[in-house]
Every structure is written in structure tokens, then in C-alpha cells.
Length: 95
Image 1: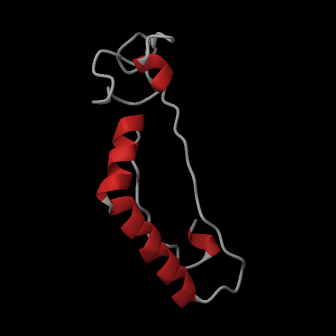
Image 2: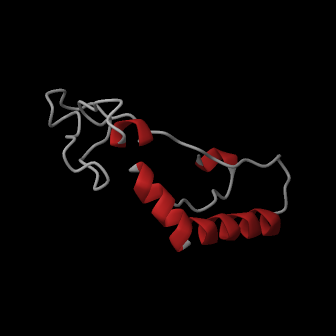
Image 3: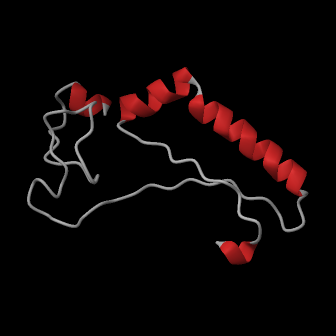
């Protein structure tokens, strides 16, 4: 993003399902002629089998709180990212 904003790199399209406010003049790749294409980044937090559900819930609540903080939201917005919150699965089989 900094390279694009500095004019050192020209973005032709975003590998996103739609345009993003941080780069309003850069179309989504589907709008630029490659329909159906989307790249998605995913980050996760894992715990060993047998970790207490109470600990998992505590960590999940802490992550949720961080994602909802205005400073973190602003950083996501500056990067054109959209965080997606997920609840913890009740078992590995539900993944």
C-alpha cells in the first residue's frame, strides 16, 4: 500500500471481491476483466488438543476485543483489509 500511495507502484486491480475505500480508483480484479478471481489471506490462532475450553474462550474474547478496537480497525482500513471474526469450533470435526 505505501508503494502504491507513493506512486512507486501502479496498481492495475485488487485481488479482492470489490473495490476498497483506501484505493477508490483501483478496480477489483473482476471489474478489470478477470471475473471470479479473488485472493484471500487467512490468519488463525491454534491451540493444542486438550486445551481447556475456558482458555480458548478467553483467548477468543481477547482477539475479538483487539479486532474491534478503533486503532486496529484503522490499520485494517489503511491496508484495505476486512477482518472477519469467527467463533471457536466446538470440536475439530466441526472445522
